[in-house]
Length: 470
Image 1 (cartoon, rainbow, N blue to C red):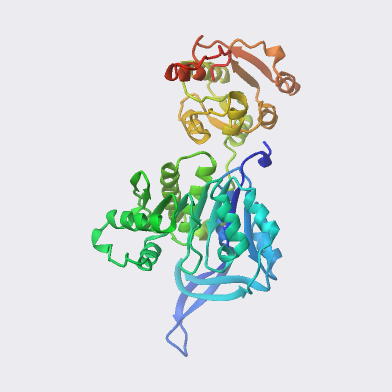
Image 2 (cartoon, rainbow, N blue to C red):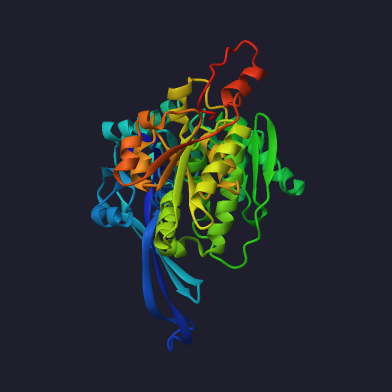
């Protein structure tokens, strides 16, 4: 599956460089009451919007593009941003760098240096934002979101696509119409204190009343759809036009909170790109941020694997043990008995040691095949439902109108169709047979299909009798 066929996530904001000098302290400096750090290693990674973009890229197969400003060290920063497409304004100076001195994972001191001169964005930046499927603003107060060209492009984007805005006290205000703004508690208190008529103290309200009140005031002030106030180990409180939603965080023992806000924002953007509703995206982001902190935060980034390819991994493991790989596919818009029978029969063909991979049509693919009102269930939820079934070992989402590209990558031993298909006439049959695979059709429950189920909910619909029960 070519990533170019999938809606891109564009991260807009200020890129930083984060450096950790790690070691141990065993003595004090002889000429001052200061610890001596015996440096044992150095870790370097992108920070700010760069970290956010990298985390997003490692969480999805969708293309991720970073719109930022880079200076004389642009080549070094691009090397740290492997897997991210970078569109940058040229600026004088060097990337702002934050260097932490750590002893046994405890911060002794932070040194900030570097910086970029004022810059002006051009048409290339505006075009990159205009081509986004989802925009994530990662503002670190260094000027990117205040640029008139960038701001106009973001204002326009908010009328077309989801815009997530992770604000900064020294940055620009979110553009009107943004889908979700994600301040932490301290930031939210600061923003509200600056709103005329809202200087009253909310702290006495406690949790979750205080973040809900802060979020409501900010949503109205900024003219945005929703505000999610993050509250560290308490979780997050989402305030939207429909009310308040509270998502507690799982306890995270130890860990490093550095980068947790970036992890939260990146997860929200990825979830929205996959079709999740805002409240579901926030729930996922809270869980991801807690896991991120528990795993060591940004300091553990080098150990974080790239975005998973679940079907490819499962297939490789099956091949290694000589097991049978079976694949089947479809839209699976509303799961029903026809799906259950097809999946059970396909899994049976895999044998006790084999695997079943479901190739799932993406939302865009379903719309082209079934019409603008489909799918009823977004691809992220359809994939989650399928993956929860005991018969299914992995789910692969594909964007094309037919599954040949994903089949060419997976190369299953058996390709299963549920329905009354003539297997010799299928488009994918020559491809599957080219590597020695077999194409089979399995029985299904006649009269069961997503289209028929939807027709029963809408009596004005005249359902088409489908051979494919998906």
